[in-house]
Length: 395
Image (cartoon, rainbow, N blue to C red):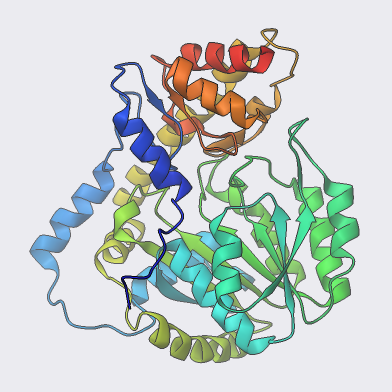
């Protein structure tokens, strides 16, 4: 059964990690894998996470199963974080813990397939590379809508809306909640309103991928778009993750939140989602969710997390500004869009040959698409990276 298998395709991120590991240069820079690194180039464990883990060691009474819905306090805190404690959307939503943002997206994908078997899912171009893979695994037909102009670093919003006008009531719109991966280019609030209008007009569904809440401009600022959708639309689905904003990547801490026209509808949708979760992974892992629940549920720890999150956000935005400033005037291309974008990623718009030259000549590692993890920059390497990007852009 196994002997005749062909060699599998190399994962682009894992393949990049192998190239990086084989580079013996002390000056090599990893801007590929999407994790937050601090000023020293380390992926830290947050102080609030360590404190919550110590508390769990001393106080967690049992490791028994919970349910397919996962940690109840975690679910409640997630809904409140997304929509605001006591808000209308908070009251008419229900959350299911999932194994990471990817698990939440696959859960949503299978649920939508059951509810709208003949519908299509509209995804932005470009989008996170795993989106098409996991959506197609559920059997969905995909439509790619224009989103980003690689040459200018700007949104293609008019073209986007023209495409979305073709949605029907059987279709679902996938949109990034903030800090778009891989481009860093987000909708502004007026554009979110226009999206809400087209969804209401066509009767389509909405699936929001929210993986970077708080890493753009702040928690409330980053959630403004999905909160507007929830105010204007009777239903929506949000797949969220704490991997980045709590730096708990390997703990797989995600959630799927279902917003209904009222609390009764949300509870019904929740009940129909649990059997889907049961067939996918049965029970989600608890440790990371218990940590997040402890932090969000304790006022002092919550304040500590928000301070640490602000430090991460401010450092990323400072690196954006410095990279953009250093690139100014060094090449024919205008890289000022980097400073205007938000989140961990941007796309350089350089050729595959330029990507290879970054690696071979400058020991700077980005993905083949030219996506850069801004959080991999620091004060010791950002100028050198900028000069390298300018050099390959001129060639």
